[in-house]
Image 1 (cartoon, rainbow, N blue to C red):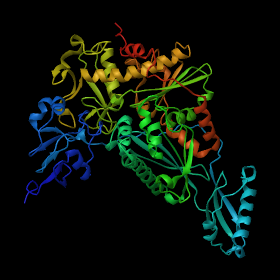
Image 2: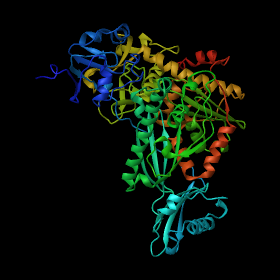
Image 3: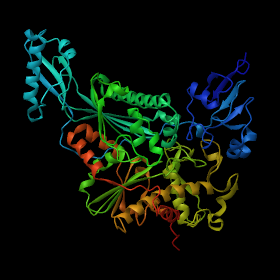
Image 4: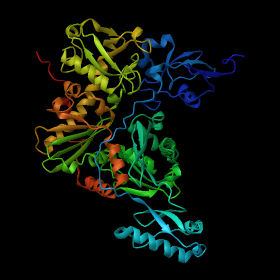
Length: 612
C-alpha cells in the first residue's frame, strides 16, 4: 500500500513521513516530521520563505498566497504554512526553504578585567569527628571560609543543612567548598574541590552562543553555538512578542525553547572540555529586551506598545534552576541590565566589552540585525537608540534571501564593463541565495556602477544585459539556474532594493538624530558588533550610505562583543557593576514619535551619487 493511500505526507528529499490530517498545514506537519522550514512571519503567509512543491491533492490557495507565488502556483509551488494535504502526498522542500545551519560568530574581544568571579573555590581541613554534629561543623566550615574570603567575607553565611548532612568527611579531612560572593555555599564535597565552571550566554534572536570557563583559572574551555529554536515559531522579535502575549502557555513554550537550547549548548561545551554540566555553578546571560523577558518568564507584550517600557531594567540574579537551566543544583544566573524596550542587555554588554567610558573620540557603536541597537559616545555624553531595521540585513523579505549559511553569497564584485558578477560564497560551493552582507555588497557595487539610481530602482541604460523583466518587475540576474545550488536563477529585484533602502534608512536616521542631539556633525569611528557587522565590508557599507558622513577607514568590526561582555561579567564582579553603571549613565533617545524622524528617514533612503 502506497503512502498516499495510507494518508501520509512524505517530505523529500529527507524521506520523512507523517500522518496527514484535516486542519494541519504542511508547516505543522513538517515540524512533526522534524523537517525545519523557514518561517520568518511565524506562519502567517507573509514572508514567502516556506515555499514547497506539492504532488497530490491540496487545499486551494488563498489571495495572499496567489499574490506571493504568482505563476509558480501552476508548477505545484505552495506556501507550507497556508497549504493542507488531508489526503496525503509528497512534498518537495527546496534548499532555499530549509533552515540551514548558520555561520555563527563567536569570536571575542580581549578586554581583560581584574579576575574576580562571583563563585570561588575553597579548600577545607575538617576533623572527621565533626561528622554528625551540624552546629560545630557549620562553625568550623564558615570560620575557615571567612578566613579565606578575607575582605570578601559576608556578614552571614548561607550554608544549607542539606549540604552539611550530606558531607562525608574523608580520613585526611580534606574537603572542598564552592561559595558565592553573597555568602551562599553552593556545594560541599569530600576530597579536593572538583572543577568550578561558569557559562556565559549570548541569547540572540537568531543565534545563541555559549562560552564555558574554568572559574578557578579563567581559562576558556569551550565555545558552542546554535540557531535559536524560537526561530521556528517566529523569526523576528515582534512576532515572538505577539505570540507570547497570547497567554501563559505560549510564553512558557518560548521560555522552554530558550532554556533547552542553553542546556544543550552547556552539555556540548562540557563534553568538548571533558566536564559535566553539574559542575557549572554560575551563568551570565545577555540578549535584547524581548529575549531577556522571555527567558525570565516575563510577558514581553508591553515592549510592543507605547511607551515600550520593560517590566524590569536592573541586572537580575536568581537560581538557575528557577527558569529550567540544568546546571549545578545550586547554580546562579546573572542577567545584565537592559536600558529600554528595544535596547537590551546585549548592547550594554557590547558597551562593557568595548570599555565605552574610556573612548575619547566621537564614536558610533552599532549592533545590527532586525533591530538595530546603536550607541553614540561624544563630548562626555552617552546616548543610545534602537531602530526597526527589519529582516533585510539577515536576508529576510529578499526574493533570493537567506541567512549567513553555506551557499549564501556574502560578497560581490562586478566587472567594470559588462557588470559580470564575481561571487564570494560561504562554504565555496554553488550560490544558493543572498545573505545580508551579500545583499549590501551587490547593491553597493550596482550603485557605484550607476546601475542603481540614488533614489532606488534600476537604471536600465547602465544595468546592461543582465537586467530583465521578471515576475515581480525588473530584476538583475546574478547567476543563472545552471550555476546555482537550487537550479533556480539567483536575482536581485527592484523590490529587494527597496527593502534594503528601508533597512538602511532606519539606521541612518537613528544615527543622524543622535548626532543632532549632541550637536555632532561627524563621528570619528564606527564600531560594528555582531555577525552582520563583522562580515560587512566597510567599502560596501559606505557604498550604500549606511551611516551619515562615514568613510570606510572609520569602520571596524569588533566580533561578538555582546558575548565578550557576557564573559567579562562571568569573570568579574567589577564588570557586573560596570555594566549596571553603563546602563544608568546612558541616555535613551526614543525615535518613535520623534518630530524629526520622518524627515531623517526620507533623507536616509538615498544611495550615494555615482562619481563620474
